[in-house]
Length: 115
View 1 (tube, rainbow, N blue to C red):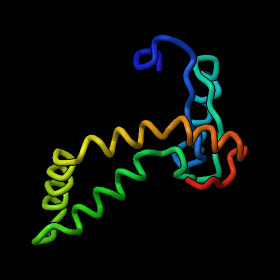
View 2: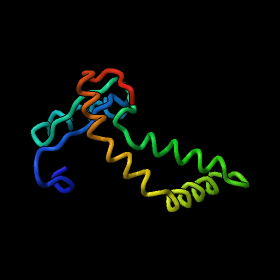
View 3: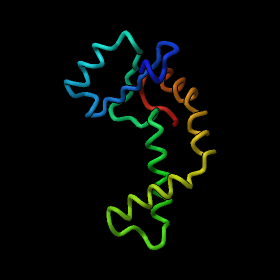
View 4: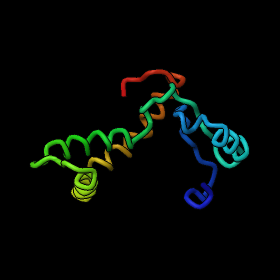
């Protein structure tokens, strides 16, 4: 966090994913809580996780490929090719909406929102 966000206290999304609830992750979060703030969302909530939207968009692109990927290596290649061709405007839109999503989640106190 200090390398990526060296200019101040940052926020960490804690969406209660299984990997974040492990003893090791929980201990690390407690030990480093002075470095950043984190807030809880509904368990396994994709509300603030941009990658969920990106995976969904990539899935739709890969599903439309002809011929469809038939091996794990074909799938990897298709995902990499699709990522390279991904419209940057879509990614920018996702990032630009983050403040509104934060506000909605904070207003809903971590509960469901319209996003």
